[in-house]
Amino acid sequence: MEVDRKEILRYLGYGREQEEGPVTPLIDSCVEELSASAEPKHLSREYELRLLPGSRIDGSCFQTESRSLSRNLKDCSQVIVFAATLGMGVDLLIQKYSKLQMSRAVVLQATAAAMIEEYCNGACGQMRQIYEGEGLYLRPRFSPGYGDFPLRCQPDLLDGLEAGKRLGIKLTDSYLMMPSKSVTAVIGVSRKPHRCQVKGCEACEKTDCVYRRDSI
Ligand code: SF4
Image (cartoon, rainbow, N blue to C red; front, side, top):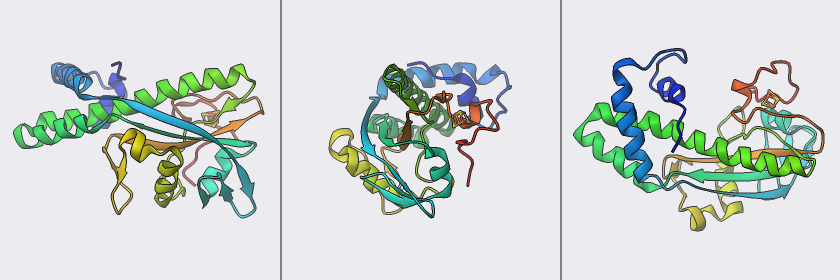
């Protein structure tokens, strides 16, 4: 599985421009071991969207109030609910090395975090192409916990996809997902032409964009 090496370094706490150096062989073997353990899967489903006064949002399967998400979804009439996971095998591998070799467990964590992002980017990139063929434009994915989009929306998003049954994603009482390398997100769909960077607003050069995924 392809993984953005600069993202792995970033998750490890190096700057984005940092060269790999001595950690390269460890990253290589972590990518290899994770690729053998990961079972990446994703689901998506489109819902009607209503943006209401007071930053209230009705996404059919979830309702919330969020200034940052309302701004990102402006001019959208539908919303795609999205979930992806690398599966429990990755968690078990990281747990195993947490007991045997902590340095490897740390690199595995960073590599798995970059891996799920890369997988989501690929899945969303494919959706983007399909939608653009129909004259529709996708916003970058926006996950609960980002800005003021509350984590308590997680159960509704997962239920909207039947992700417990179909992807095996469970939630803890504090809304953390198991398997831990899992993602939920919403993605706005608009008829208004606007091409977004699939890696999201942080990687996008349109700094004056009105839909930008600012923190709040
Ligand atoms: S800043 Fe870029 S990625 Fe973010 S909403 Fe605007 S165009 Fe899309």
